[in-house]
Amino acid sequence: MTDTVRLEYDGKVFELPVVVGSEGEKAIDISKLRQETGLITLDYGLANTGSCYSEITFMNGEKGVLRYRGIPVEQLAEQSTFKEVAYLLINGDLPTREQLNHFSILLNDHSLVHEDMRAFYQNFPRASHPMGILSGMVNALRSFYPELQNMEEEINMTMTRLLSKVRTMAAMSYKISRGHRVVYPRPDLAYSANFLNMMFDNPVRPYVIDPDVVSALNVFWILHADHEQNCSTSAVRIVGSGRVTLYAAISAGIAALWGPLHGGANQAVVEMLQEIRRSGGDIKPFLARARDKNDPYRLMGFGHRVYKTYDPRAKIMKKMCDRLLEKLQLHDPLLDIAKELEEVALNDDYFIEHNLYPNVDFYSGIVLRTIGIPTNMFTVMFAIGRLPGWIAQWKESMDDPHWKLCRPRQIYTGPTVRDYVPLDQRGR
Ligand code: SDX
Image 1 (cartoon, rainbow, N blue to C red):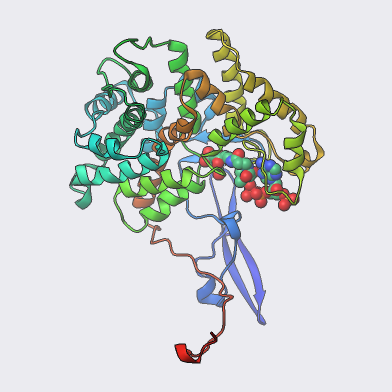
Image 2 (cartoon, helix red, strand yellow; image 1 turned 135 degrees about the vertical axis):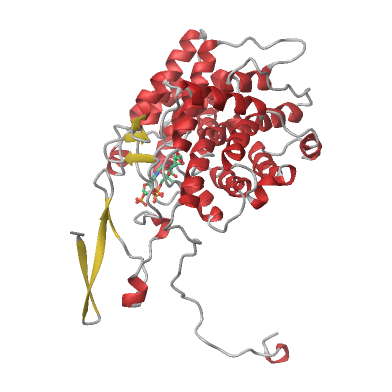
């Protein structure tokens, strides 16, 4: 028996069905609301609006729970690899050994980028932001691999190609931006190690692959791999609903992720910590600005639309900062500032009342700094991590029988009808 809610309006009573998810979440199905009542709903930021059914990622914002295909992210961070998690998100189950081997071979075979793409990179202004380059170049893949245009190519091949190439494209943009020779992927290196080598190897100082750094990068990408219907994933689904190619939908997701309120926050956090350090290390003025209702300033890396407690990913990321810095025998003063900021904020009435806790971006930049990633590539690292999630969500939407073109309505508040006024009858 389906649960319903009663809506009384204009002297009539309407029964709207309530749907329930596998974890007990409930929603009012309003797909027939306008047809039956003439009403639509209005929900700025879509904070109260579900856009789809999904079997990929479950989050509980009040309890700080995150699971990919039912598996807790803590277990995946501890025991899995990014390659395996990518397979899990896209295919629904962990791969068998044979499936993982086949996936590895495909990732290797598709890790090169068309040589003609280098001309694109070389002609971007040197100061171009890597996220703008990545979004443009992913869209450009369509020109180099047109098979997808008419869906001739087996879709798993396309998804694997994108997963493999985006890593090469990111490293390539970094090398070319510095005027260095591009380093090619190596068949003997696994996904994360290959990326690090493409980023940092050079003829006069061969890159020494440190297993601790590879492990940290694997965990970093696992923690970023999916997060249900966040801003950039929603962009991928909405753009994808127009039946564009996977490349165009992912390019839109990269553009959406770039913003400082979303994936761009990891770069903004480090810039904020550097500014605190430059101004003598006193965090009080920054907290005061964050609390000031008349100041649009936000404490970067804090707060979340869904998590109203500590982001489970931030907990793992924070521990990883300590572990990696200790293993590499390094010290990062920004970590000390971040920890002090967290300590003070979590005991501050404003942050407590507003349920503001560190999110995934608060410590992630420090992990990336320790690995040697330049600050302007932090959000590219987030994008590489989120790519399997975007692909899985795009694929799920394409396979969903309920799915249709995304086209929201609005409430118009502009001028009511009026006549055109010829130019010579208007004011000066
Ligand atoms: C990511 O959606 C996802 O899942 C995203 C993500 C993923 O994996 O895809 O988790 C990745 O994007 C994490 C978030 C990274 N962004 C930041 O760290 C930027 C700083 N955070 C804020 O801008 C903010 O917390 C948001 C945007 C993340 C969420 O804010 P909401 O849900 O839109 O809430 P809001 O902006 O309306 O704020 C509600 C209240 C306001 O105060 P009041 O006007 O009600 O008194 O909380 C305050 C805000 O002023 N507030 C903050 C704050 N965040 C919210 N005040 C100071 N500092 C902050 N960081």
